[in-house]
Image (cartoon, rainbow, N blue to C red):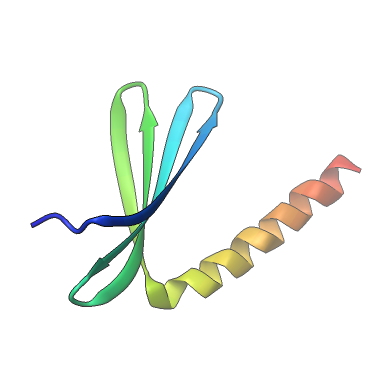
Length: 70
C-alpha cells in the first residue's frame, strides 16, 4: 500500500519540478522530496526526526545565498 500524501507543495524552477510531500506510515511522519527533470524522477526520504536539522541547514544556505547577493 502506498502511503497517502498529507500535504504536497510544488516548486518549479528552471527546467526542474520538485514535489515535497508530507506522508505518514506505521513508523511515523516523513518527507518525500522528488525531482522531475528531463522525464526522470528521483526521490529522497527524510524521517520526521531529521526535518528540524534539514530546515536548519537550508536556513544556513539561504543566508549564505542572500549575503552573497549583497
